[in-house]
Length: 214
Image (cartoon, rainbow, N blue to C red; front, side, top):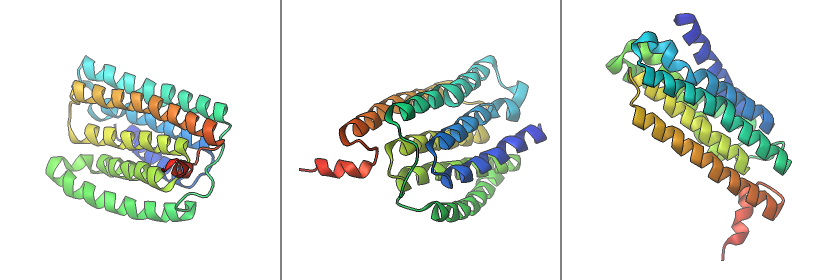
């Protein structure tokens, strides 16, 4: 179990830095899809046969939605809006990477404190969970384009999912289904909003919404 788990966690960390340091939306979506595929398999890798059939089904649903369905929706939206890059974010790409380094250090400290109370072997998983949450928040608050913020929301949800997997042995089915449903609805709502912003202003910069102030 150690090698598959270490591989998933390592790719999770790399994906976070890759998304914060990249301006190409297609690349961000593909990294997000890879995250969804790998993180969706975490319950199986961590707990294996201790899980019942219900949680296996939830893991498969998570993999399909986060690794296939959501990325395809976002790639289609990107093509329809002809939106390729994040330009002039609130915080530059280098600055975002520096903040991410600090976020990783804080995540490791929090994971060590919490992991010692839950189960020390889950500290690495919790580190990646906290770091992924931080990456999602950074993408939401430091980027101007609506589509990038949608990606940030999904990365944030990935982090919450990893935290749940690392903190409890058996994921409550209703809670996980609720999270997935919220993410599914949010992608559609924010996707429609992003398309309408682009149609109205010929841009996806959320700063354009300031002109709607009365």
